[in-house]
Length: 260
Ligand SMILES: NC(=O)c1ccc[n+]([C@@H]2O[C@H](COP(=O)([O-])OP(=O)(O)OC[C@H]3O[C@@H](n4cnc5c(N)ncnc54)[C@H](OP(=O)(O)O)[C@@H]3O)[C@@H](O)[C@H]2O)c1
Image (tube, rainbow, N blue to C red; front, side, top):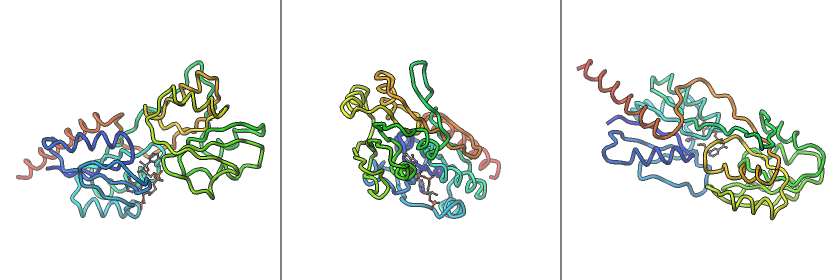
């Protein structure tokens, strides 16, 4: 059976693991998680948790565990692990595919300000007092905490509680895990009087409802664009990752037969 490593932490990784769990999948798969989410949803597959120790550590781990293929199904903003996967697979001679869900794109009724990174997002809020919904996760709050006080009112939404030391002054937090629906998102925006959402261009269905709600209510959005990742073979979803794995298995089988 071909041994596969799935780098996870996303819906796509969960769906792929579900397909790989099937007895007849033809693969032995291990899911790798960073260990940053307090109560991750775990598959029935073998799971390893925690960093590899950079690209070098991952390359060694791949060789030691006789991994034949890696599926990088991490979040589009998890740039370090994706870059490490490219370097480690090249070093260890292991096939790699990245699952990249399509980015969100604005429609004619959207009021989006596209910015390249979190620092630019913080600057784009401007000096006039705003009621801001920050949905950027827990890691990147510093850029907003360090803004000069302008009377902004902050609501921070994340899966796990953020470090209070990273929060802008007076910020309130709401803990929630998607998927979210448009009616509830509209109700939240109305109830909190939100006039600006700051978000990453994560793409996907689970957290897109806030954008539909913003469109319906005329709420402005600051959209942080995705980091640029090193070149890799890319597929758009878990089904295509599974098809890619099957194609790799055929190639591997062919080369084993040639060796015999
Ligand atoms: N960034 C986001 O917005 C976001 C959103 C939802 C989910 N996630 C998930 O949360 C995890 C961490 O995200 P991040 O932005 O902190 O990543 P990151 O900045 O790219 O990675 C930081 C370090 O965490 C370790 N790591 C990350 N993902 C790993 C995985 N799946 N298995 C083992 N080690 C991993 C690696 O440590 P070593 O160098 O020691 O190997 C990596 O160098 C990712 O797996 C991602 O899929 C991220």
